[in-house]
Length: 172
Image 1: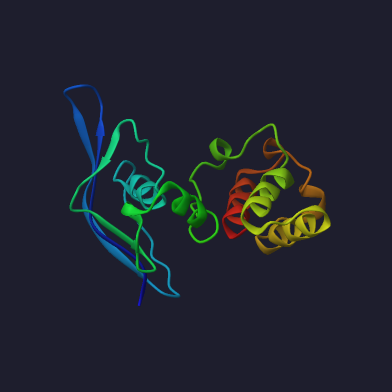
Image 2: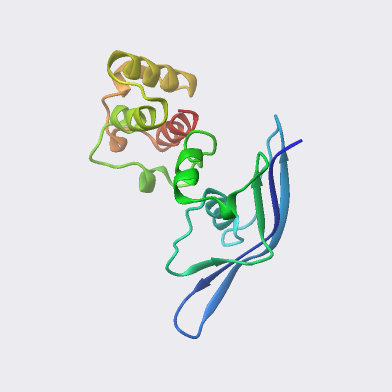
């Protein structure tokens, strides 16, 4: 059984009143249960746009998904899912780790606060349980001195550590 099926995904962006850009042109792939699939391609080939489409995070103002496109997650048609359903799935069952962690991490909040935000929203954790789980996640992704790093800000971490924080947030 497949965890995810993407069929004939096409995405266009409206540039202005008369111009559109075809960002993804008919991509299809599947992710079987208990497996990993890598989307590989050169810069600008549509990897991020495909992932954003799956997550339901394309900008509504200027992005459109082709009518023939299908995205099915665990048997559920994500393209017909409502806003509340997608919000429930994002973070709890589907996560995305962005390529540039510094553009995804908020520089004014500590790493612990940002991981905690995910744990509060999707797991209902608070207080000591939240802090302990955040420390476990940082340990799991290989952040040294996890308890101390919880109070660090993104700019105080290396690029690799920032990426690991993003992975911890996706796991959370």
